[in-house]
Length: 255
Image (cartoon, rainbow, N blue to C red):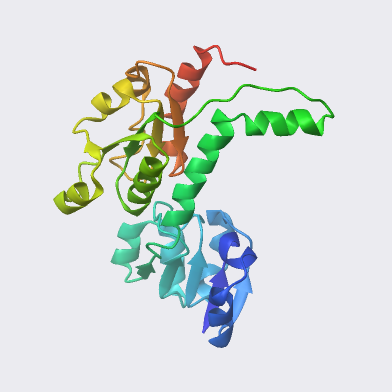
């Protein structure tokens, strides 16, 4: 059994997952991804499986792999938007992912980003490194209104931590189950345009697919009644990049 390992998160993080893979006595080749299609095409047929990150697993890659030894594509994570799932199904290639592997980590990371911004930690760090001493006034996140788009594992974990810190939590997810809504005691908004009207923070914790690509557009951004912080720990293309740039250019941001 020969495996191609491309995910740097797997490779660079010590732990039981490393020991498990080693114990299987597979032949493992490591390439640091994410790999482009042109890198994968000449080699993918040599492997029975690939443990991937955000590599370009296109139709061409899957078809080429099928002509060789490829049987399994395993994503070290949960986002499958870089894998052509329709082609994998067509060619009989099994696709796996690791749900629940990082939902706590990501929810904590979102809060870390918010604390850094509101407390000016990133700015103070750079000032101090320059040998200067300048006191910047920060702000509390207590009482801020956070709107969470996507109420899966990450969204749920973020909501619970946000409530514990005194934030007012709202959420939007048309696919959230009734049980998850009832159990979470979060104010669910049925329309995303309504959600952004009165929030300070917009947190995006949803997958990238045909439905969600570009969903945060100029109309939604401009629906905000005040300057809104967007924290996107999902995929960049969930936000319409041109609309975002145009909206940022209209703002006068503090130095």
